[in-house]
Every structure is written in structure tokens, then in C-alpha cells.
Amino acid sequence: MDGTQMPAAAALTARYGAGAEPKAGPWNDTIALLLSHRSVRGFRTDAPPDGTLETLVAAAQSAATSSNLQTWSVVSVNDPAVRREMATIAGNQKHIEQCPIFLVFLADVSRNARLAAAEGTELAGLPYLESFLVASIDAALAAQNAVVAAESLGLANVYIGALRNDVKRVAELLGLPPGVAPVFGLCVGYALPGREGEVKPRLPQAAVLHHETYDADDAGHRAAYDPRLADFSRRNEMLGDTWTQRVISRLGTLGALRGRDRLKDALVALGFPLR
Amino acid sequence: MDGTQMPAAAALTARYGAGAEPKAGPWNDTIALLLSHRSVRGFRTDAPPDGTLETLVAAAQSAATSSNLQTWSVVSVNDPAVRREMATIAGNQKHIEQCPIFLVFLADVSRNARLAAAEGTELAGLPYLESFLVASIDAALAAQNAVVAAESLGLANVYIGALRNDVKRVAELLGLPPGVAPVFGLCVGYALPGREGEVKPRLPQAAVLHHETYDADDAGHRAAYDPRLADFSRRNEMLGDTWTQRVISRLGTLGALRGRDRLKDALVALGFPLR
Image (cartoon, rainbow over all chains, first blue to last red; front, side, top):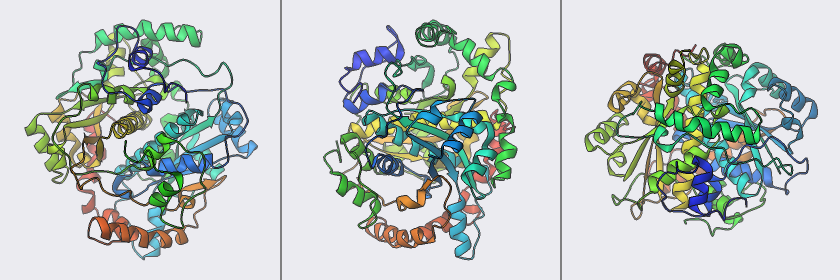
């Protein structure tokens, strides 16, 4: 289990950079595991042990779900042609084709709607943005538990938000009924040797954690973080961009959204009126 | 660490009910911890060890974040008057006043906007529903890591989605700038004796996990689950409702949304145009 032997000081330095560590608190192997997370984009094709998928989903179902509504589902996709098309939708992310387990997490209020229909009633609360948000958060909490379970088993992973580039086509490929929408994908498998990557530094904790009220005076935190991320980037991806540059290139233009500027219309078409 | 010694078979029975267990797979203490999750609504007032808050946030920041945009923040709230008002907003959830750590997780694109303004540019991608969704998912992944870290330290917790009953007032209380919105709260602390609760059974795994395409034929799964949840409810909350009854009472009327039917307008007012 990667990282579980790492002491607090080393783990906090890896996550925040030397000199930027937050106060050290209580520590154990689970926390070491959480801090050692890396997103991995190169997978061996060999499958993990039998029952792994079911274990990951059991962990996912154990996460909190708003009012126990359980407004999420997950599809395990193995069909190579479907994987190939999803990889293309996601901007040619080849690891979607390579990883032994590929999951698509879904915001799903259709199960609740079916239940009501069977009882001869309707759920007045479903057409609201709130219900889509609850379903998306439910899916995210569940998926993160699956990620933690996977990493505890030595399995690398990466979220695929880029499935939202074309949620209507992903929904067609999965045969989703109205009231179900893809939220993101998740690749799971053993990392290819040399592709485990390095822990990515995050913003200083003081930029993210506020006390009592929000503190927007964060220019200094950004100035401290920019060279740290540039160093990481140079070591790992050869670009050497600062965080400032990365954020602007990712969000600065409509084109960078790669179709996700049409997400609202697509969700409405998939049965989420978002009132 | 509660539950970490629990073997797979017992943990799966607790989560799914006798006879409804999914296939058992690989197992370890982390997975046992994840499966043992319970939402707790009664807390001792004594504080956990110094540095616990910082450790939880370090775990939260270690979760994946879309394109490393880090579009979330968290506010630690201790002011008793603010806690009291938030408890009222959340439908009189007294544990918000009792728990030693109360966090409000925020969807936050304002940090990215400030960065762009300082560089003399604008982020064309920000006004879209996609950016709010990314921020909400970022917040959820982060929060779930904090929850797992807390539980690994023996700290109970419960999400407070009901802060969304009035996000505008919560935003005022926290002094949020435009582009920041409360997504949910989180109570953390030691459970009061006798309030640790019991693992809540979830839908059969086959209702949630689909293979290749979505399978909407789930009436049998619901029929099997209804009496299990009614039994749990009778043992723990004295209501004895089935899942079917709970879903209909929670989503059947607009009134049950408790103001969250106005969430969209409130988010627009907080600086998320949701295009």
C-alpha cells in the first residue's frame, strides 16, 4: 500500500512543498494513504483480483447519500468499441482503453422516479437544480470512496471529467433512461512502471481553509504556489507552467471547455429540467 | 478505529442485509473502515487533538481536483451565534451547535477569477453550469477525503445538505465574495455514547452497479430493500418507513425541498450565472 509508511512531515512536504506545510496533527496509515494520492494515466492491462469491482462499489455505496435517496449509479464498461469512443470523446485519453476497470458514474434520479410511478405518484422535487446537484454530489462522494478503496489495494486511478464533453453521446452509449446523466468516468488499474507519478503540490492550506469568514486576500498564496507547480510540471510533464498559466489556459476561452458550454442543454435533454 | 477489525463477510452483511451481500473481494482495514461509515447526529463537545482540523484539510486537498483548478474552499465556523443560525437554517439540527468542528464546504471559482483579474484577463469558462458543477464535485471529493480521515481517527461526522435551504443567508454569514457558494456543511466530533448508530443498509448492489448498459429493471431490488430499511428504521428512528415511503415523503412535494426549489436563483445571485 503506497505511502502508508510515510511519516506526517514527509507527506505534508510532498503535498504542500518545503516550508509550506500546515500544522501537523494526528496521523495514521489511512491519512498517509489519502495524502499520497496521485492521478495516474498509464495502466497495466492485467485485471485486479476477482471481486475487486464489487468491493469498490461496496465502498462507494457506504458513503453518505443525501437523505438516503441514493441518487447515483455506476456502469462498468468493458466493450472495447465503447471504450474507444469514450476515449475519443474525452480528448483521446488512451488510458480509458487500457485500464482493466473503467467506470462511468451517473447522477440518477430515474430510480426514484420509477419508484414513484409504480406507486401511482410523482416526485414534485425532481425537476429542480437541487435534485441534479444532490445526485452529482452523491455520485462524487461514492466515487471518492471507491478511489480510496482502490488505492488501499495498490490500484491507481484517474477521474475522467472530460466525458462531459459530450454527455448526450455517452448517455446513448450506455442506454441511459431519462433522469440519468454521466457525471465523470474513473479508470482503475495497476500503474505502469514509471507512470505512478509524483504527489502534486496543492495551494497553501491558508488559501483554502478559512476561519469564521472568507478571506479573499490570497495573492501571496498564489505567488508562493506558482513556482512550486511550475517545478512539479517541469519534472513531470515538461511544460513548466505556473498555476496561474494553467488556470488561464484551462478556463480562459470558451474553446477550452470543449463542448461543456452546452452541458446545460444536454442535461435538460437527458431529463434534468434544472428548474 | 471503529470497524477496522471487521471481516469482509460481516461488513457486507451489515451494509446490504443478510442474503443480499455482493461477491466478496479483496479486503483490508481501510476498506473495513469505509464500509463501517455511519452518519452521526449527537456529538460530545470536547475537541479532538490539536492539528486535527489541519490534518482533515490536508486529506481534503489531497483528493483529485478537476484540472488542478482547486475550485473549492472550506470555512471552519466556531462563532456560537453563527452556528445557531445555521442550525436553524438547516431545520433545527442541534448537532451543528454541539460538534467541536463545523465546516462549510464551498464551490469556489472566485480564486480563479481573482487570479485572472490580477493578470488583466477574464475567464470565459467561468459563467457556465460546467464550472459550478466542477466546483461542487471538487468540494465533494475533498469533503469525502476529510470524512474518511476523520473516521480513521475515531471521529464521527454528518453532512449537512440542509444549509442549501438558504444559501444566500449562509453566504452572508460567511462573507462570501461573488463566485463562492455553500455546497454543504460537515459536523465532526466524537459521537456521544449511544449515538454511534448502526450501519444503514443500502440498495442491493445490482440496483446501482450496471454492466455495459443501464438496467432499469429494478422493481425486484426495491421490493427486497424496502423491508430491510423499514427494519433498520424501526430499530433506529422509530418510524418504520420503507425506502419507498421515505423517498416519496422527501421528494414528493415542493414543500419538502424547504426552499431549495429557489436554489438556482440564489446561485445566480451569488455569482454563478449557470449558463
